[in-house]
Length: 181
Image (cartoon, rainbow, N blue to C red):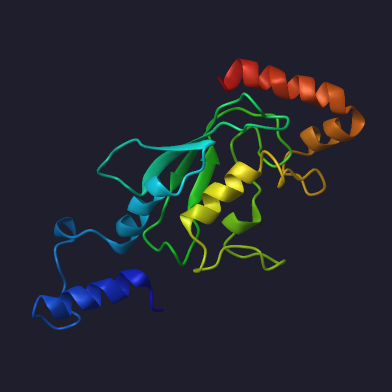
């Protein structure tokens, strides 16, 4: 399988005067994944902020989302994003670190967002043409237009919304007050 990482390795081998298959010390080169990740700093929305836990590990970072509308307005939600070496052929791994009452985010942090699925029946899952910008936009949209009560991960939250929207809003606000400040 041809990946951007393998193409970069081949090109670096040719530029260094070696054969396309010669190996280089990984600590002396920046991987294609890390080159792409540097761009993440410039693609965030006003409601999102990226922080690198370790500046030497660009493939592991946190995203804070502070929705400016809807049920989750005034909350600050932390996500951990791990970008695998095989990125862009496979999606990043994302987990919500903030406890939340949300139909598409489990209280344990798992996220139901089709573009994070490596294989998807509906064709909206991960594809090599997708970028971290798509992931950031998708996560941000989980608090507004992608909020999906019809295909929930947290069934209790979705049923709660169907039963009593005002009480659902109150529970969301309680979670924000206790966990998302």
